[in-house]
Length: 153
Image (tube, rainbow, N blue to C red; front, side, top):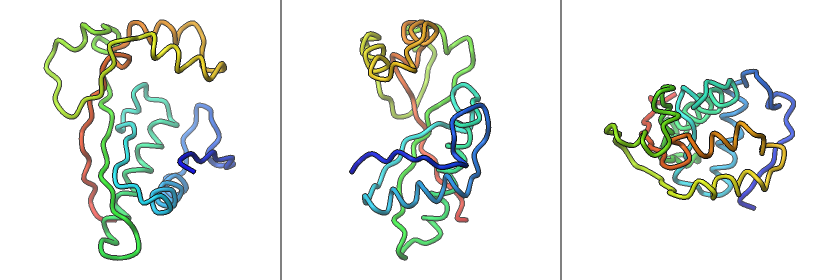
């Protein structure tokens, strides 16, 4: 019940953008049905600039704006945290990428093998370059978030 798998024609994987309204509607429905008060997603850089990631960020931010505009109504407002996108130099320094000052809430893991084990659950995702990513990317060690406050939609 805490997982929803969508087979939506407009939200297929691939290097393309998704409609903001479709993403937003699915997020709002999921948040409402489960009474969720915190959502974590990509920032508008999408970590890698992948159109699906960027669309997810924009859609979730839009959903928060819709929920905020309906404050006191039937829509549950939720807090939103966006994963900070890093530039290439910091992205691939592994734990050394933590040396520059980064602020905000943080989620950390000092065992890159945990990331590889998680990828192994989804065999289609476990390709050689993702193993390198898990070992050398700062994202495998620590992720920093910014709380987002959307304007009311």
